[in-house]
Length: 507
Image (cartoon, rainbow, N blue to C red):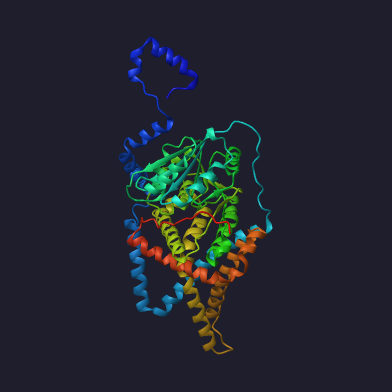
């Protein structure tokens, strides 16, 4: 491709050497990139799918359960059943105590975040807009069956405050998704945009698509967005300034995700509370303590070199964000949070919410199993405080979700036992377990509300209104999604439950 400044020089060369013209072709950068992608696409697709598994199998979720994990899981289940058959009362009581204590420990982590939220000032925005040289920034968006929202997406990406000559936006589409590709092409996006088509090779997941496109990332930094996202225009500026001023091991930054359609339904209102608690309550607390961050699935900003060095995303992990945050930590890197938000919409239909949430829990199960293949190695890599935090964040979250309905059973059994006991001789053990279960269930709801509402601005609180009273039903739905995830991990471990998106309404 000739440069405009050298056209006269090229014309003179063709005049003196006319045969040279037979070996020259003039085309556009876009056509060159398209031809490069087409050459060897199937081979690159296979390398993307198998690269992490073949190069760093310890980090890959392609093997759902290792042989050692399968043995211990089978032994634990068999031992529990055998013990129950021999001493049922003691077995149930022991399980009750262990599960209640685990639930309580996970609760204390969120209580810590709530206490810090109440006593520490909110972080200030840490960047300025002083003029100076800027690096190239790559932005990647994985798209599948997203034709309805591509117009909104392009408009939002064009509003990012970064020079168009220094931004490299890759719209990553499945090769057989003709509708989305046609919708993007019809919009005729600017030269900073590139449509990358991914060969239809399994697993058909977002991390597989992103890792396929990663090799072509030209930016020093790289951001990931979802199709429905509306990122703050200054988010790249803040991320760049934070990276420049941060330590060398800072590899990733997570922007807060804020739900914009909280008023649409009780489901979206409670989703908004959950996101507020996580992205503006819990994750900032973990970042301050230099603990591992289970990232959100979008608005992650990376140092591109480090992202490539750690192998990119795991194509087989359907919650690739949490996996990436924890893998970065165990390899010696750190993550932090931003203040410039990204707006997105929550599902308003139960079926859509359930499919999305089951995928998340399935991915968290995959992540926990991958990291726990060698617990002693993981503890050495993370250190004891981070190892415990990981167990409470991921393992505790999974146990809490799966066993939440059981807490109600425990409460009912405890209440029945106390009513049947003599008034002057209540069993201390029964009372203690009842109090612990009551604290667990009530504390879950109060901390959820405290972190969520406490991180919101007044406008968001008005959108939530009275619908916070439905938190107990929301947690039962979370439990149902977690159990669905356990089943899917066995029957269809790498299936990506697609969440449909629609343009943001203005009503």
